[in-house]
Length: 345
Image (cartoon, rainbow, N blue to C red; front, side, top):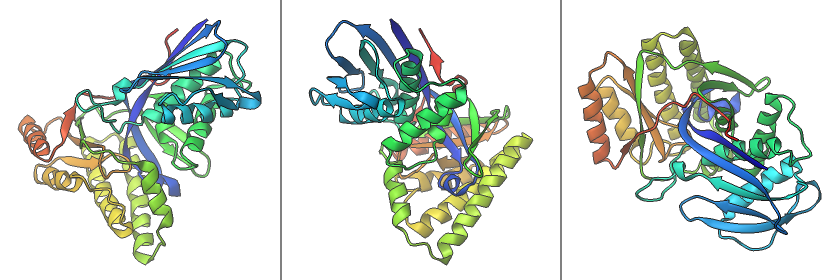
């Protein structure tokens, strides 16, 4: 018995923070994939191997209803923690010992071994949930695609301490470009990338934590300015989705530019530092060259995206890339991934 599954990363294009208040968020799946392989073995215990930069192995046995007992530390604390949440959510109790291989190498920078901010844990959660369900190793059943999504969402949310909107998991399951709204009920809509818009993804070289920023957001006591800035961010998020659905290139870019302004005001009002680590400088450079730039997701580091119409000069894009390099950013050879969760065996 051998089962393999993979799922893509993501970049959030709009709706950061506002999605938690019911506004729509838009994300694109990215062509770096977390890959999981499950094989039945004759070993006495289950094992898990991480193919991340460090490379590590751990053994475990499982109890009733998804409880895990680790037999050694294994040196892969984050992956072990994530596996526990998924195993428990699935109430996994396989009839045979399993050898799991978790491969997230495409989410790491080859030169520095630093993690890129494309949502590796959400992609890994999706791939591992899909592989375990396909292998019949869980008491939980996913009779519909929606069941798998909800199971993966619950496991990843538990892993994150109840934080986050789940758009990273939704992008990993569906692929392509999606819009997600949490209220009144979680709704996911498939969108198309605007044919007349070109883009480039950049990495700041500095890590950022979505969970840490959400904790900071929770600790902040909202004042009048913060409430106004959140209302403006929600309105700007709605306008981005409206423009995207109307499929008018310049209208999409203008709505994203205005959304970025609203996001900056929101970040300042709540002292979130979304535009730290050089993002604000790139935002200002882009405005000078009739481009649109914004950080993706929690900000404060990690990933950003620059966009323009196809008619915009290549010189402006090249010059922007050079100036971004001077600030320590690097252009990433990553692009939109149309496929979501994929079973490879």
